[in-house]
Amino acid sequence: MRWRKPANRAFVQAAITAFHEEPEQGFAQLSKLPVKAWTTSDYWLETSGLALYFYDLLCRRSMLDLVPDTTRAQLRSNLHKNRRRTKALFREFVALNESFSEREISYANYKGFTLCPHASPHPELRHQLDLDFLVASADLPAARRCLEERGYSLSAATPKTWEFKAGNDLGRKRWDNYTMGTYRSVELHFGIYRTAHDRLTIDERLLRLSTWTWQGKAFPSLSAQDQLIGQALHLFSHFRNESTRLSWLLEFRRHVCCRHDDAGFWRQIISLAGTNRDAPIAFGLSILITSKVFGRFAPPAVETWALESVPTTIRSWADRYGVEAVLADFPGTKLYLLLEAQLELLEGRPPLAMRTRLFPIRRMGSCFSRATAESVPDKLRCHVRTVKFALFRLRFHATQALRIAIELPQWTRLLRKCAEYHSHVTAAREMTNRKQVDDKFSAPPR
Image (cartoon, rainbow, N blue to C red; front, side, top):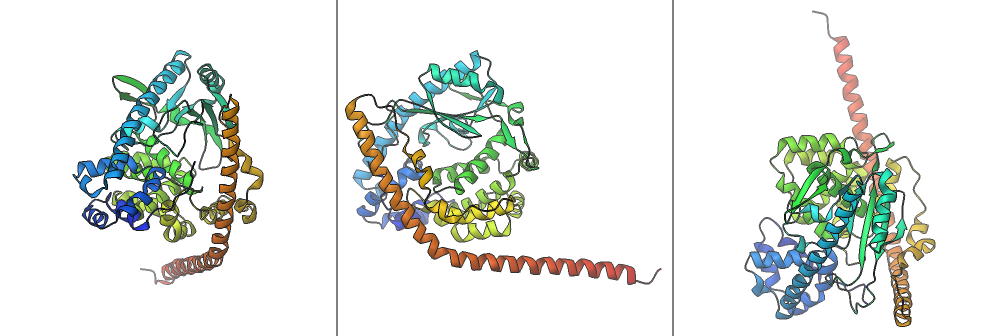
């Protein structure tokens, strides 16, 4: 199995430009690229989640002639495989919904299929690996029993999420996002969240549910406003990690554009975002980085609100590193550590030592989750894959540690300039306010 294959950067830029409102420049750049640029970049297309969106774009624009024969055949094959995979995943989706409903569990479908058609025109174009559900905390044991009855077992748990897995993917000989196999994954997200005042409370999203209808069936889903805020928070969580799929940015952009002229919708968004501590920054950072990659797209008033919600240091990180972080080859970069340190300061928490994050040896074992392997050959393949992945991760940690060491002095100087600018602005405002007060009381009475 391969985990890394650097893309041709000219292809990456041309492919992204093709998704802009005026894609002609991107198509012109693609037409000039050699076949090797396409074959070198196929892995980036897959891991970014853009492969099938890109193929669909070329089909709709009648631009398939730009694509080399081997790449075109591969993209067409991947679409057919993903269509079959999506149908199988949707059957599992329906079965789990019916099981939850029969037990009267308070839940909602989260992300995934329910993002169609506002964020994604067709489910088979999405790079969806698992099913997500938002479940009331009191119903978590019942939801767990439903999953265990269908062959799932708890594989990971955090204070906010339980992850369940079933089957395995040991039969894959290469990275393949489109073959279903026996592997299945479900995440249960708890019905609690952190408010703007840093208090945990019952998740009110479960009281604002909507209904998502597909193929004649109806399923509980988040309200339209909560869906979009959820997309921004999901992007924000990945900006704070090693890699972010570009397809998530594209889907966020499409969802915002679908609601572009709905002023009432945006008033509700701004009101609801104010009840969640992270939502305003998440929205601002998502709009800022997505605009840098795919072009400006948000309503002007919403863009102004969102960008004003981003603190100066966070915006500086987005301006300097945001595009590079989301365009990086898999498995990403550790530039997010510079962002995370600033966010922790804003949250009133002392940043963790950079050294422990650059080489998280104690947490590395969690990366090597092993699929169910019953036979001896399967167990052997699992061990071999684990060793290869360990070496791959160690190489990644070492190269990223060097990158951060080179970048840290420049970032520190930039933060110092931000602090000086902020102090000058604050002093100027105080002086202006003081002058206004002095003028008011020094003016002769009428």
